Image 1 (cartoon, one colour):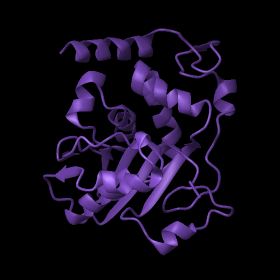
Image 2 (cartoon, helix red, strand yellow):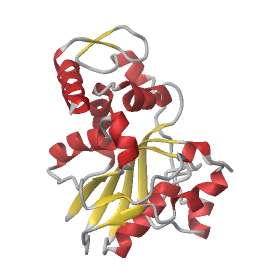
Image 3 (spheres, helix red, strand yellow):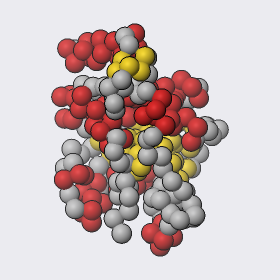
Image 4 (cartoon, one colour):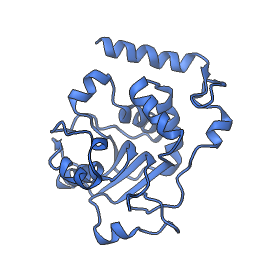
Length: 233
C-alpha cells in the first residue's frame, strides 16, 4: 500500500510540476527531456524486422534466417546507448515516471495497432515487483493502450519462475535461464499480441514469452521495445 501511495504521488508530481531535463538538467517544462536532448538521442538505425538488431539495409539478419524465434516481429525506438541507457535505469530504479510517458510517445509511431490486437507488458515476478513497487513495462504500455484504444492484459500471463537476472548471465546461458519462465491462464486464439518491454538484449526472454503465447493460440506476437542492444556477434 505504501509503495502504491508513493508511486501515485510521484506520478502526480511528474504531471503537474515543472521538470529539469533528465539528460542536461535544463528546464524542460512538463517534458522529461528538453527538445535539444530529445533530438540528440541515439535512434535505432535500419534493423532486422524480426529481432530489431541493426542490419546494413534493414533486411532480416542471418541469425533469424537460420533459427527463427517464436516472435514474428520486433521494433525498437532507440539503440541502447547513452543517454537512453541511463533513462531506462532512471525509470526502473529511480522512479522517474515521466520517462514512461516519454518512451510511450516515442513508440507510438512504430506499431500501428492490428485488428484483434492486445497489449501485453512484459510481466515481472512478484519478488521483483514488490520491492520496486511498479512494473516499468506496464507504465510504458498504459499510454499506448489509451492512444490506440487497446486493452492491456495484466492478469492472464505472469512469471512462473523468479529467474536469475538476464544481465548477470553470459549471452549463451540466457535462453536456458528462461525456459518455463512464464505461465498463461487464458486463450489468445487468433489474436495478435504486442509485447511491450524496455530493453531487448538477446531476445531470450521475449522468445520464451512468445512461445508461451503461441502455445495458447496467439496468431502473431510482435515486440515493441524502447531500446535494442547491439548483436553479440
